[in-house]
Length: 353
Image (cartoon, rainbow, N blue to C red; front, top):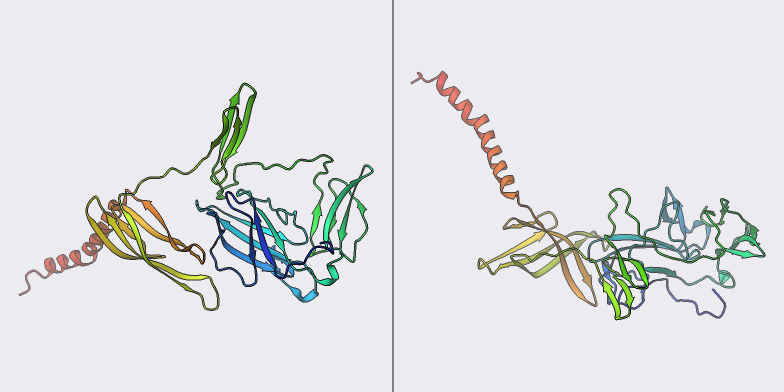
């Protein structure tokens, strides 16, 4: 940070590149009520943790101000309307880091997340950080604000260097003189839940242009007739009933904003069969109707946009057979333990009067 820049008064997360919404600044003191819906978008923040003196222990971030180091960091988990989530870890001193400790980064939502905090007076002349430069045909790096390293030191591909912060090391995997930044869409590893997408190609007299279309970011092609937009989404099905939310209740763990339980009072309206059913749907007590099972899966409490309840509705065509099997099993137990012993007793003692 330069001396001319006005220092922020409070720590804040800044989120940019939000589809169809302006950049958003979220103060971390006090923490926002979660889940927090980003204004003008359908993306929520479900978890947020701030560390003013971050250190890594057992491969996770913890707060430890005991050594007096200045190392702010934040962990933010985002969720979009399709239920996809991704976690961002951002260090104030190293804003360009997209991942940490050998883990591949995942920014499928294409959000630009940064952390802004007040810099202590002793660091205002030269904010601590790590920079790499290419000068006179040589690559070198410098750890700014570290007592151990202050000069530029020559570096080559494959070298591992110490940042002097939080026992963090950086491996120089490649050095490129003329680089361009781009995003890449790759299949998720294993059962990792990520986005779905479609690779689209537009062919014209000028050639073929290929783009990826994602749920939150459509592909836009420029043509002579104007822009062509293509989007991808999960197919939707009309339900044979409607749900009306009458009331929602959430109980937090004492002293926290973390939900211990939540439930909704709803009215199910089936206009086809002229039925109306009122019921309370709880976290572990779903509602069954016409082969559908309605689960209480989440909720939204946003001071600006109001309150909402989120349900997951599953169609189970084998529900009749499940109930039938349970009834048959129950009858079998009754016959085995009650009817059969009674018949044996009657046969053995049938002549007793």
